[in-house]
Amino acid sequence: MKQMQKVSLLLIMFLLIVHAFAQEEETEQVSPSGVADVKFGLIKGKVTDTQTPRPNDLAEATITVKGELIGERRVTTDAAGNYQVINLPSGRYIVTVSKRGYDGYTDYVTVTPGVESFHDVRLYKIDTPFLYTKPAVLGVLVILPILAGVFWIWMLVDCATRESSEGNDKIVWTIIIIFASLIGALIYFFARRPKRKEELDR
Image (cartoon, rainbow, N blue to C red; front, side, top):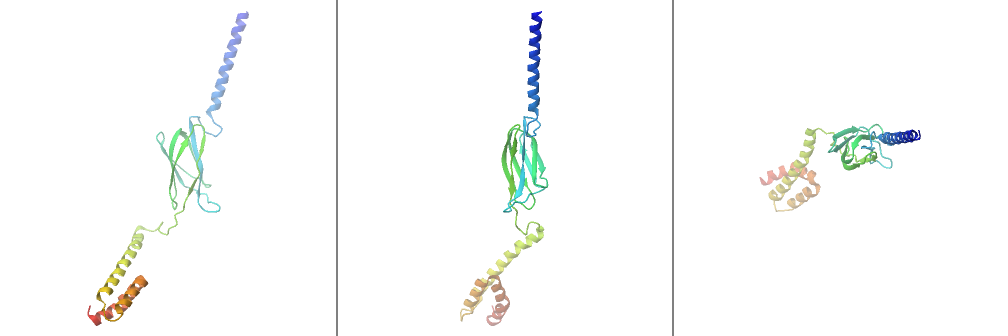
């Protein structure tokens, strides 16, 4: 009888130990941070601009996370600029943040199992009027300064080589073209050049 009691006691103790281990394992399945499994972690953060003194939250910014085990994942920020990428295996990831009108951002973030990796990002706004300009218009805006420079050089060489060395006309008009830049070149082209061609035939 005593032998049976000892066996029963040992059996009860064994069952209690097994139950305790099962409870501990079940508790570890969900971490306090909300990560579904201790084998995984997550990256979360906030995207803002560099406005001072208070930065603006950037909604609909694209967050791209790249890693060997997951390939590539993309999420977008909410109205408050927050983002979250969950169920990431342990490892190092390339995080890229982009939004139209802002400079891109790339950095490395290390993910630890069962831990939230916080990574806030600030993007610099691109202050340029060419951002939304059509390619054809942009091409014209690039070519015009080049043509203006070529015209200025042409008028300067024309004045220096074709104006008479007698008197002060060559010196005066050369100074005007140099210091008045494009305006000086235009004045010389329309005001002096036709008169010179009549006087000197060149």
